[in-house]
Structures are given as structure tokens and as C-alpha cells.
Length: 253
Length: 198
Image (cartoon, rainbow over all chains, first blue to last red; front, side):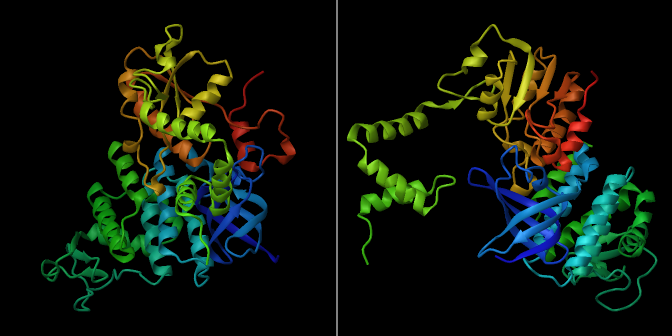
């Protein structure tokens, strides 16, 4: 049985039999993997704590016929602050589901970039105080870019013309912004004010640290959230379950 | 190619639908039932039917019971000011085995798990609030120390605290008889967070 090492993040887990769990991991080296954590449901198992959602760990795995098996494990980061706050926990769960739903197993094309991006997002999320959704939206845009679905944000996707300095449109089906004069002719175009457009461009291009100091107006924050939600839904052809829970938490907060 | 006789194949197929039972285990169980005396097999079949027909959720705490109210909710010696929230009936049984808790229970019948499409609306959370405003002084959240358990605990705390009730969570950390050297980082962090003054 061949062994290999990997740095991994837990995206999902399901119980298997009496004592085991099947984990969906995102590894830096091999992309998304389904693996078995044998005995991890026993309270005395060294793997029990490591199989929690968004745990980051160094692993040794044994190749098996269907699912590889964890043979050794060392936790690198528990992301503990995220587990103490419902707002952050709901957002971190969303990040994990988004990564899970947008990647294929053992696709290593952008695995390093996606792994580092997710780890940065989780770390920043734990440090946010004013606008945690900023980290979420920056992650969404950068993940979409890494998998080849980055929306156009600097010109009209319909005409190719530069965007006017007023409220423009954002069309999920056309893949980005449409000019102010075009937006009423595009069926699914959502309004995007100058502030919202600038915010999205900041999410897509600025240094991650800058996200921590953003304080957008509620209107812009809502426009960006809606545009990205619909764009992702259009691209992955489904709605994310954790997004609905996140909406409940936002509504109550 | 030879196949099992129809009734036997049917039993194997039904047993295979049970959680954690694969084709081999199902066959083993089916052959065991086949070799059992008639009355033992009948007892098993009757037990399955009886449990389906008579067991329902307690109208107060959502525990499984064969009456309108479960045994614990009918017990007048228990302290109604203390309410322990657990995820499953088997967690309630585990708590009862300690002989330490003399309050009442509320069984959620699951934990919030957004990725598995289990939201708060699918659990017995709505039924909890009328009980809390009705004389409960402390709600003890005794949910698994997992991400799902923690999500549910935080969700409940955020909804219960505005009602003016004390909300506490059971401690988590090293198991009794455990070994520090063998504990993982997550467990040790938890043990440190929940440390107490001596």
C-alpha cells in the first residue's frame, strides 16, 4: 500500500459505520479528496478532533482501491475563533461548501492556489470585526477567477465599451457588467451602483488585508451580495445549502 | 446463475437498507433469522411493528415515548427550572446514566448542519421557546462538541439569551482516564478554554 503526505482542509464529513468517518478534504497537493478516517468517531481516537469542519492538518494517507485512508495526522490550525461566533461559523461553513461544490475530485490544476486562498480567507474571517461578508465576497471572486469563471468588472460584456460613471448592470448569464444604457435590455441584469462596482473591483484585486478596513454602505453591500449570489448560482447551476442558513443568520443579526 | 429464494432475497434487501449494514452483513443476519426458532423470529417481527405503532414524540420534550408525555416529563420530583437540551434520545439516556442531572430535558431530534440541508426549522427548536419562558431559570446545552453541535449551541444561545434565561454549555476537553500526550490540538485547546479555578 503506497503512502503519501498532504496538507489538507476538512470540507465535509459523513459517518461511516459505527466508528469511522468519510471526509471530503481539500489538499494543497492533490486537490479535493474523499478519504476514510478510521476509528475517528471513538472518543479516544487521535483523529476525532481532526475530522471537524475546516480543520487544517498535515496528513499521511495510504492509497486504497476506492477511498484513501488516513494513517497519521497532525493538526496545523483549528481555526478556533471561527467556532466561537455563529456569524463567522456560518460564513466559514459557506466557504467550505462553495469550494466543495466548485471543484472536482483530484483536479490539481489550481489546487495550491485554491488551498492558500481558502486558508487566507478563513484566517481573515477570524480577524474581521465590521464587515465579514467582505472576506466572503473577495473569496468568491478569487475562487471564481482560479477556476476560470471570473466575472468581467471593467467593461460592458455586451458592447465592449468602458462603463459609464453611473449605476450599471451585472448580468449573471452574460458573465459580468453591462453598461448603464444596456442594462434595461438585458433580462437578468441586476443594478450595480458606482460604489458597488468599486467594491467588487476591490474584492477582486486589492490586497487581502485591505478587506478588514472596508465599511461599505448597506445598499452597496446588499447589491454586491445579490449579484454574486446569482452569479454563483448561475455558474454552478444550484443554490448552496449553507447560503440559506447564512441568510437566516444575517436576517436575525 | 442461482439466486436466493424470493422471500429470502427480499429479507436480505430489506436488511441492507438499515444504516451500516452492507450486503454481506445483511446476508449473515438473514440466515441467522432463518435458523432461529419460529417464535424468536416472530418476536423480532412483532417488536419492530410494535415500536413503529406505539412510539411517538413526547408532547413536551420531543423524547421518544409510548405515552402522551414521557416518563421524565411526568416525574414531579424533577426540577422544572433546569432544562437540558440534547440532540438525540440516546444523548438523554447518556446524561441520565450519570445520575447527576435532576432537571428536565428537551430533545432537538438532530443538529443544525447546513451542508446536509438540516436547518433549524427541521429540528424541535420552535417547541423549546414556550418551555423556556414558562419558569425555566437555566438552559444547559449538552450537544456534541462538533462543528454541527457548536453551530446549534451558538444558534440556540443567540435565540434564548434575549428571553432573559441563563444559558450554559457543558464543558469539553480531555476524557476521563485520557492521556495529554495522545490528545489532539483541538481537544487540548478546548480543555484549556474550559479550565476551572481550583
